[in-house]
Image (cartoon, rainbow, N blue to C red; front, side, top):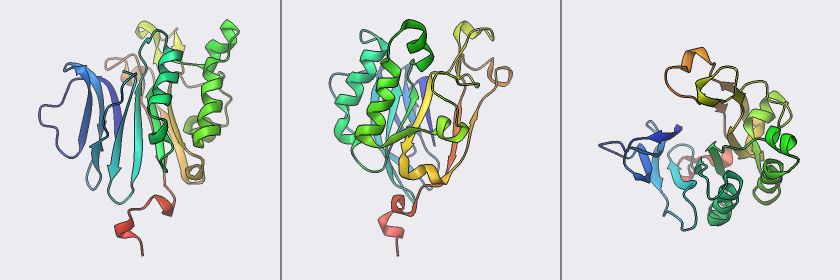
Length: 210
């Protein structure tokens, strides 16, 4: 499955797609392939930066897709989104992922804790941890694999896209791959973050459980 930001509304959205946004040419989509399907959750007031959907099939979980907007800042947008979807994020299991437009490196640069406070909140209140950092053992703000190149410039790399998984899923985390600069240079200024994980048995569909 995938979360794609800044994409047009699919012309024929079936059970494998949930799209959110007010501009049909630029929104955010949650996409799945059989045997998985996706069911959108009601859109919450107070945020244009997060949307939720239920993934159903052999593995079942809730996904909160992120495309942080300036409301009025990216940090405030993330705080608002988390509060708007607090009850959804409390649902187990839940995965939070997308374009956060946020970085612990920026915290260090500007003498603040915006991103680190968000990560502390996600772990403390919802039991969510960054798949990238769990896989690489790198520290927030010291990432070696950028996910965004400002104005498409290789000399302006940042790590601002994340996938937060339940802590109980980390044992099944096989690898996290970030797309390289050259192979995606014509597609976007962002790079995909690909997470390979085997969820625990508790995430299996009840209909498939013994």
